[in-house]
Length: 278
Image (tube, rainbow, N blue to C red; front, side, top):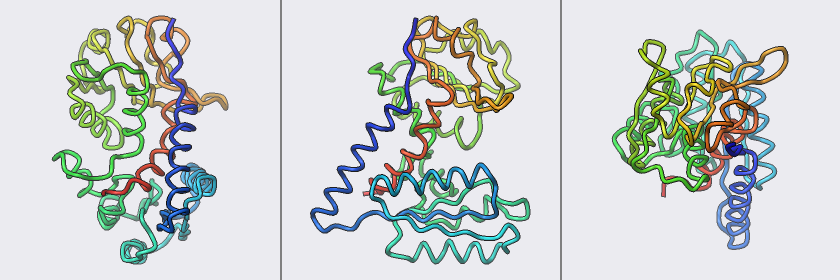
């Protein structure tokens, strides 16, 4: 029987470390970090995430500047908002809630966020720096995944890590982070042949495909670490891509849904904000 890899508990520990950083800055008269977050329209998931950011900022003593724009905002106006925040010396980090309304070009607009304030690594420049191994902010969900793996005490170096999913948000960046930790990385996707066979050779299995309860114990190497990034609502219940209970019988560590990777994301955003690029 494996161990539940609790993202909530790890988040609490990291949040306490952030509180100490803020306390130190206040005590020594240093500038307290300020987050600027932008919401276009009223997408429920984006609004929820932004509200979570604001609550956590208040809890940790971080300053926050929220910008709310109408759903039909013109592209030029949104870009102007971002450019003004780039120039604002009081603002240390910027996050634009995605997805944007369909009339707005996400790739173009996120590219206007200064890489020095791009704490969720949304811009092309930030991602380019990540893949080149240059100093940059690490995307929050992949960063949380690496923190969860490291919290097990298992050394990543030399391990075979298999990622199911090749998105720009999770699959691709987490593969680079694992390579940076000297893991051997295999990326699988919807066109991969022999998926089960490949997964059964994984010391670390990261699942981000959006197929609820797709991964059963037949996909698991005994003693593997399994990270479930999937989130799907079924009959009012949030479930992951992994059949948690049965996989836990075979793996060494498994993240639950909810309470696993998702619990880490906002905390990683605050950690990026406080650490900066220095």
